[in-house]
View 1 (cartoon, rainbow, N blue to C red):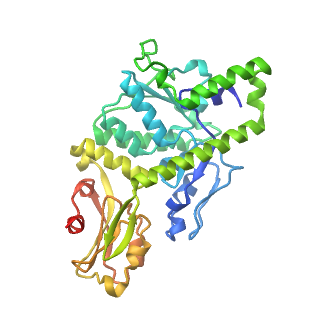
View 2: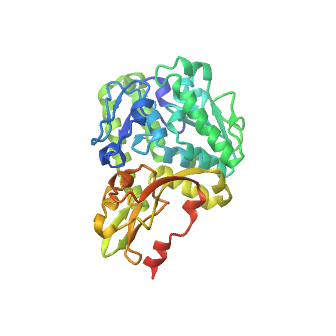
View 3: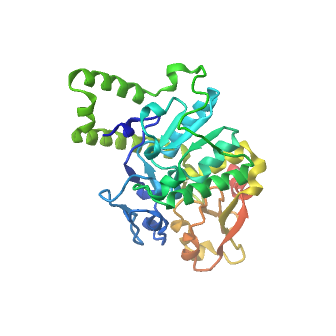
Length: 368
């Protein structure tokens, strides 16, 4: 492991994980955005099967994570980055997001630095959420170096540039540019002190010190087996966190005597949190949501095929009105319900995010 792989308060990982349950292909919906976006052709997306990662070709840039919930970095994932930036903001600093491959050494970073494999690994919703909270964010990135980057290549600045542009237009705030991968306030006292470091960072520091005494950290970094053990540990930890977050994000409701599980995807959760904090931003954010034509819908005749096809549980049945309805908060506009509906009663409509804030009539029926 090189020095560059051990920098920053949040350590980047070269492991990308595929979340099979979130992949549209695995739900029979043709989608190849991840395959087309991957700069090293490491992803294959066959209809009917979850997307697969060829780890021998994957460089760990995380571009797929920035465009689809079906992928996540083992560390740091978007939630870890978001949490880290919030803690930095609470200490009165500007958080500086830096590309792992453009930081020359760990000496160039400080406790305000957040190092990620590639800025394109962060979804637009994360940028929007952070700016909506009036958090000061700076970016350290040499765009010329992106053109020849062996990890992500020239597609990276196009993707993260667009993500930042969207966030700025939606929040009317700007992401700053830093001349170095650390905060200009680096010498400011940090009221959080050592608490700013997580247990993992503290543990790594202890191990590094002990190893230096016995056989030198250089030999430790070269240990292939140690790296594999570390990756396996990170993988288990990440999957456990994802399972925990899913229990928090899922919302079970009862419709017509049946239990139907609705799952809120990470990017949609970030968007809803943004709207909760800043509801006035809804008119600036575009979304695509399925809508049901009640005059055409006959759920009894259709046997609720739309509900069965929906990968997020957004499509539900309202027994009182004898028709299907869409919970816009959970709808990702994938179109699975359209293909499944034999009555052609469902369409995808463009709207602003205010539709996500509306109280669904079906929810009021359930409460009664």
